[in-house]
Image 1 (tube, one colour):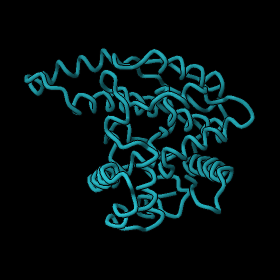
Image 2 (tube, rainbow, N blue to C red; image 1 turned 60 degrees about the vertical axis):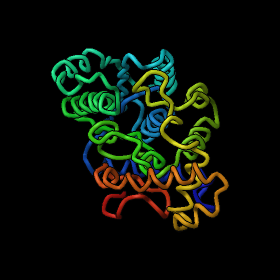
Image 3 (cartoon, rainbow, N blue to C red; image 1 turned 90 degrees about the vertical axis):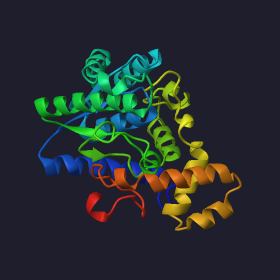
Length: 279
């Protein structure tokens, strides 16, 4: 998938770099902080921030839990070394355990659901905002357009931040831009680009557990957003009816989250949010 026929990936890169710089200049700030998960989205945002602001002004915080894989840390460290940005590691396990102890009554039935997952995401948001306040750095959100379109994110957790850097890029476009950034050599580690995406909020979790394959999901979302098709037309045009129906259902349920996220840096003619929320 391409963004639009008239918008090459090199121009997308230039637009995002320019808008990041303009946003920070307008805020009178120079430093940025973001969570490094070892995933492709945070890797791309880190690379864009390093190019826009200078690596010396970008700080990544790794916040592993008991569900984090070993390569989440090593991939983040390799990324930071390639980009020249600073990092630190703050495990969230002890904070999560105390939170669960304090709210033990809520979980007496022993059932696991998104409540426990969201607590982890919100702890990470708490850490990033604490760093932001203490060191005068803006938090860069790392959510993409596919996630925003389907509500695949936690309010006041991984949807927090000062700006959504890649909130107008579908997941397949995230990979395309990463490949562009690596055009002259590996800056984003190859393992980040080839491993299965995961939020790592429960054992063995993969994005595909909650979402249709990104190739199908993004095509459905693109048809709705950029091409202006109705849900009925989308269902008629997609061979995988079940996946298309699932994508449509997720999109319908996401609107209350979309209206509460930070401003999005736009690169398309069909951003998800009203104009007053876009940059």
